Image (tube, rainbow, N blue to C red; front, side):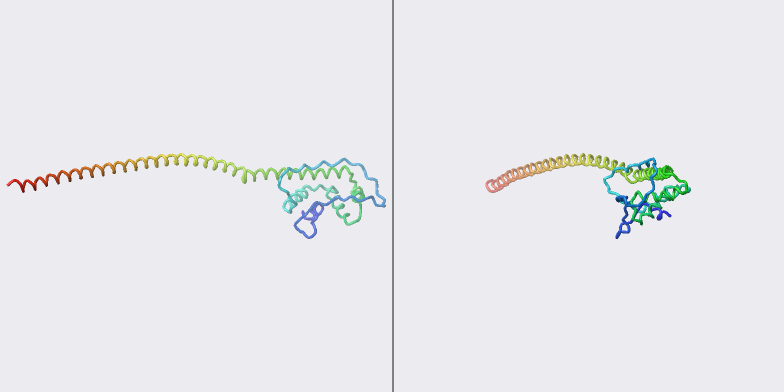
Length: 228
């Protein structure tokens, strides 16, 4: 089960069941205990460096489950790196130095005819498995990024372009409104001028008419009085 495999690589921090950290590799001064000669082995291939990110990541069960299940599915037959890792983990309970712990765990592998080079090769096998999982994850992440980020960024650019066009239309309409308001004001002034002019003309006419009609009426009254 992947949770058993998880315990070989991840240790839960005390007081925080959800938080986890990778197992430390503490080195102690050599104890006064006899140790078998350590056979030479080719160095393990380094794991791919993680991509840089401004977001700080943390170990979580979702990622652990995916990676551990991939390692379980790719478990090589016989005694390989995973069995060796289990032996190393069991020896954590003993107060051994790393050197003695690694050599003691190897004694079991050696009794089964497993060489250090084979352990290194099987460890590299699991690095390759994890590398493939990383590639699968990256491809899936790219798809999610396209769906959740890139497509939305494209839509955002379209909306920004629409906003600019609409703002340009608003500016054009505002210019037309300003022009129309200027024409309105001009017409209001023209109408007021015409109304005032017509009112003055009417007033002048009626005043003049009054003067003339009053003169005629006076003449008519005088004629009636003086012409008998």
